[in-house]
Length: 533
Ligand code: SIN
Image (cartoon, rainbow, N blue to C red; front, top):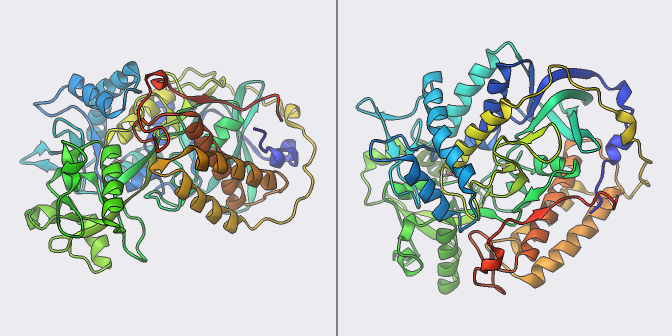
């Protein structure tokens, strides 16, 4: 599939201001912060964020970070739970690295000052779906991601070797002949371009929820990193596996705000509009089944009843516990007139997390030389077909750190810019970027949702190809245009991969292929056709 670089073709790179560094980190969530801190021990680092540093998926993470640190827990149990939730597609060595090193990295977070909640001085662990132990560390009740980000960011800002750039949108990776040399940025505050050339580049740009109409992800989650790496020639893996979080607030006018799985972990019931608990109809483990099973159970129940939402009922839970454990959820719901101690919370599934992504090895290396990926944008093989709750922060922390420790030359090799020279695309009709973005979100929500089928997937692939053709004829200058281009690429990769996987497994459910097929107990892969452009 040919796509873009038309912007680069129109830019004389020699005239763009240049920074040279040993390591470039694109992204500022837990993986980017971990990579920058690890890399700073070996040399200079540039860490760039498309928005402000506190604006990442990590900041919004509520439930917590899973680590086998409790007295009754061990690494093998954590590995077993992760692999069972993953629908037969988790890579055991990658899971082991995460579970083992995760304990060390979490202790480092504690030493760095992360204010994880404690009871009588001891770390407090909560439970979430499909965990056989209480193993989720949390902070400020349900503001774990914010506490971790603030702690790590403070350390980053006090590290002299790390040069930080806010409001720098990565337009494209600088790459030639299978080698990455850094990235070209648009400084969105001042409208200037910046080239950063680096011996090693870590893409840690987070997720892609904004490709869908209903998502827990913030506005910045437009899947840029997937598109950047794909265009640079990296292999994408398991792009069909998009996780829906079962419980997001469903109220007219309210954002699709996440109501943490820890709420069920602390005893909340999922009920239909007759007040009846229904999950046992769909799974033995009920409300604490793996996330894919709970989302599918909710949709089956909604189909059965014809209702638009189900509810989370906390009325039997100690109000004091609710107040201390879920202050953020309580205050957001209160803004919409709900007292979660007394009122059931209306919820529905929404897109939350991408299990697939840029294929990486155990050291976070992609198959493009000098290019690494970590966090949600990467596919380490840890999550398989369905991620176990609260493993995402852990994976980002562990593999972000591994990426930051990559061997890299001290001096960045110069980018052979002339290899990028291309002819200008023909000037196209002016696109309505907002309209295209809304259309994409609606299409993805309709056809790439919890239940999919071949006819709609094939239609989606064709529609996205046509929309990508308009985009190819357009010269973008601003962030929204580049983002929509990235979102179309990502939507296309999801739809194509979902069409190819003719079975149901984990978060990928096909109504025309409702069973798992042992022949598909493998990862799917897609890479750009280099001869097609
Ligand atoms: C949650 O708090 O339910 C989200 C945690 C996660 O996505 O793992």
